[in-house]
Length: 270
Image 1: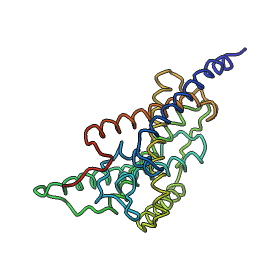
Image 2 (image 1 turned 90 degrees about the vertical axis):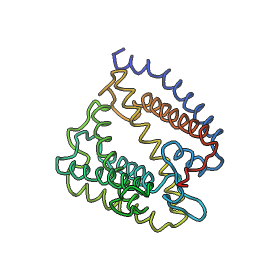
Image 3 (image 1 turned 180 degrees about the vertical axis):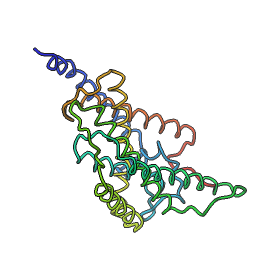
Image 4 (image 1 turned 180 degrees about the horizontal axis):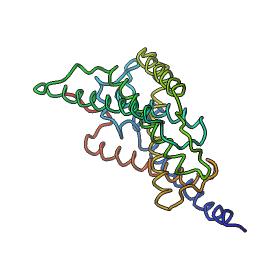
């Protein structure tokens, strides 16, 4: 029996243990959070976003699970992750020029966020009037920037045979991603109820996906298992572990905020 087979055999019990833990944690979290699929999405948003009503998009009387900025960030990140994973196991960072562009996206997010914060204090001067569409646009840009860094790091850390190329290797890939992001932004701004319903669920999925990928990387590095995986199937253990830690964080933040505010509603400006 070779070393790789021994490694696989050692992982099988951990896989089942973590699967059981994931099911138990998911069931407990679903039981304790607000009812309905949108209620669960709002509970995910509750752990990462202020959910201020005036700074969120609505469909009917229902607001999206996160504010305009966070909705853009997590939907943009999910879009970027999905697009780059379809490009294979490429693990090189974007070129210098593309990195500068993504850096500008991140800078715009910071500037718009700081300006939006200044608007909360009438005595502090704001550079301009931040609106939900500017929050959405800059949030989406930040989400793309996060995915542009996260996916190459994930590929080059996890895969044994990762490719020394960037998933965003040229202008055509960047333009494709930006066009998809623009379509996403327009769909939100149209505020068509059934579309916002779907995007609400996807934004919550974006939070879980990002946290799972990040914590999976942390677990792999802690146990010094870098570059030992040949496929997604062989990553079941770290991915399940990452999901469990992600759900633990979401649940802990939900609990802390609920104990503090005694409500599942977002924060109020007044």
